[in-house]
Image 1 (cartoon, rainbow, N blue to C red):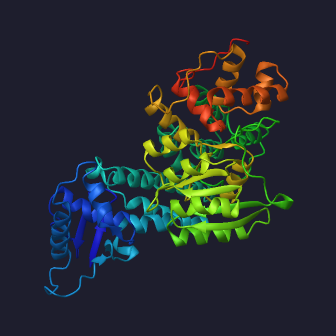
Image 2: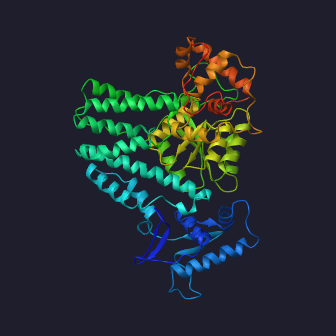
Length: 505
């Protein structure tokens, strides 16, 4: 049986024996097709992604040679003129044909998303984690597509760790889980689920003091890193522990892989270029742009389940999305960041440049930091992972329509750490000329506070804060609250890990 492994050193196997896949770039061709999940990858895409920015003159014939040699390795018994069955020609490129059970990464993803009683979840997560033999696709770390896919798989691995622990707590295995959860929370201190699981495990062992201490540690980390307090869920958990109400583990919340909502204006302040009004009766119209029919169908089914939102239309690429916006007048556009013909980032820029644009939320399976950062600069309202639960998709749509910024704190911290201080011709103007009052408000916006919270902090009426936020947007030539966050970090006004200090305090 032919099998492929990507969760560790990349390799193809025939009945348990490793196959000779050739040199690094030849192996990269097969790895890229595996990452595509059975979908065809155009030859031009293979060329661009194997030789970023500098393909050789004979790139096409080189790719064809790689494919020919890979076919001989994968199907040594195939006759010269017999059609390939594994690495197949799929105009305008090639595709890998394999069953889920033949590819460890595909099997892993299916196990992580499986459902059932706690015992079944425990067994499935154990099996999923057991497939890992090291970092995914590490030998292709110089290629952006491999880095993106490795990040997505690593995120799913963390979800599997947390789902396993959650099932284990329900099964009464707290004692055996504490050490692993301590390490997990220490390594990923911005994951809400990591701290929740650790605190519950300690509490279930009778270590109430240690459980509360874990939540205090989480609070300290989040204040230092993000300037934020604990989430409402962790605060409720802390209160239940103090009141000794936590007799049974709380119902597990969705894995913390979906962008958290950083509340935006709650007053009369609106962006300089407001979104189109919602449909009559308050029903939000949503346009979905994604090149995968399965994704579009899934989002449509999700929207049909909620009377507060409705399907406004669909597009299969960026050009279609741009044309559809004036035709259907959506309130929110869900836009895949990577699409053929015109990618989501370029489409977002065009859509947001129009008069009275809708809100744009990028859908991603973890795009590159460069793309995510550029999208924030362009004024998108934030990001949704395609692995998000339906209820969180719906909550995000409503939040975006209301003018909120959907920015995962962990993602934001990573991006800002990488790009803060970078100069760019498209950067907003310097902050010179802003009053102390406006600078104080900008700092608090960057820390994720709502207008009401800013008003409480600075002893200002909420309505006045709304006017100050509007003045900031106008002064900097921006139209979205997420852009204010990036401007504060880019200018050096706020830095990663900095504790906020305000002149009027």
